[in-house]
Length: 190
Image (cartoon, rainbow, N blue to C red):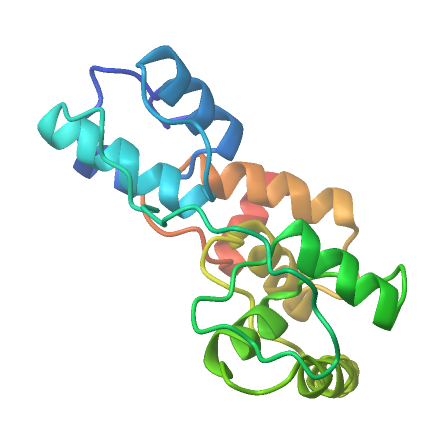
């Protein structure tokens, strides 16, 4: 049932793009081939594709200059143009919002799109985002295919278990092509 090829040097980039690979598999591939291992799953995939196509090992899609910490963040401080979710920012938000604070995707987007506003504005926006998420289902970003699959599975199969959903996911990710849920994936349960 597992048609998916192993991630190795014999793989071409177009085949790599057609299958689902775990982040750990991509990190292991990068590590064993002298590629940078850090970054998001999407960054790793782009790095692997570039390497498989060109052999370049120095490809780095996240070339951001290192920045110094802000001296102090206050409620009246202005959000920087090139905001990065740093430990200093995390500590500020945990102090002002509470230990349950996390940099969720919507909040990160808000921060990046609202440079020039104050950190107090960002705290109010954070609470608005949390409230909105309680009322509406949030969009799941592309790199979280598993989460989207599980959500879509349960939308069509309220009588099934998480174990069933995971079994179908394992089947789906072994196939060539997209990783979106389809009712035909239930074949994995037979």
